[in-house]
Length: 252
Image (cartoon, rainbow, N blue to C red; front, side, top):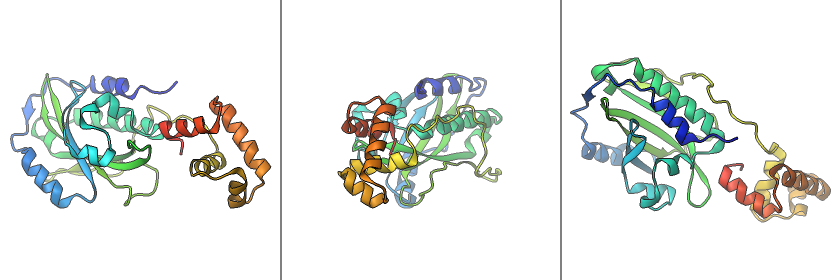
């Protein structure tokens, strides 16, 4: 059974302490936007996320350029559904680690850390990009815990698949880089083997079984055998259906 990431996020965020009442009076969204335009290393969008209420309060229009979805269609449950299935358990582990880390801080120290980690997000065209997710807390009280979050497309900078998380100290606070977190949610086993995924990718690019066999140095019979196994595993009626499922679920 697949994880409902939005519901799991709510469970994690419900653990946030309610006895802090602080606000970063020095935070200015306009100034941060200007700095982002100057220093970001790729296309980006930002949002203000109220984790206490599990909702986006502000989403920048740049999200349409980066992900391709109309601004008015994006809310937190929709966005959570765009995360690559293989990255979901890691994403939830990271969010659990973020909650635990900030629960150990109080007062102005809550504003003296930037969290950053990466994961993959599905664009409107079905392709995935890797984004660097950076956040700071800007308000923390009984009713609202607001964070300012920036997602930057770093697909051109990071090729390896292993996401990492760091807590970057500001104003003299110590940093904790490439932190190991508990495996609260364990990744599910991949549906297809590496060879099957190679064949699936080739089929999605319009190659025939014969062409795939030549490219992979295997026989057409072997390719067709893999295709039959994939149909059985996915409980699909055609390879076109599997290709659609693959784009929807991040199997390629």
